[in-house]
Length: 160
Image (cartoon, rainbow, N blue to C red; front, side, top):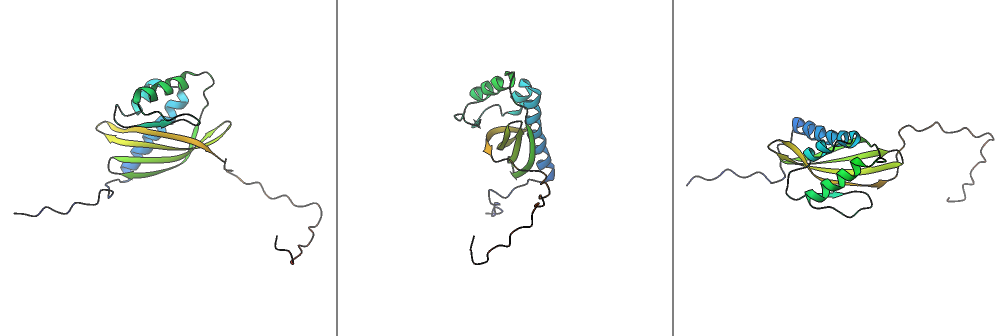
């Protein structure tokens, strides 16, 4: 009886640059749908079924597609819904599964988001979104101010 070839470990993946780019395109389409208030595009981005989760900041987790889509319809149709800019994206990918971690920049602060995608026959579809507050990061640091008076020499006998 012929022996089967050994199976690769389950997390060893065929996840190349092309797949990474496709996942980033799906992630960017998510933020485009958010900023353009495009409910139809948001509906298309999420997987049609299966296990999924959405955690909006300060809210209880949503686990069904119906609840998740209802939440997005409410957000996207709200006149005061914030715009969001996605920066610092990085991807963790395996065959059929990818996670994008990114920073969401809003007018009133910043969030970190984890967006999870699965590979279906028609491309990468979202199965998870989790965003939560984090301290803002500065993009450009101002030059340190030069003191007007000379600094007092530090007493080296003190530890602090």
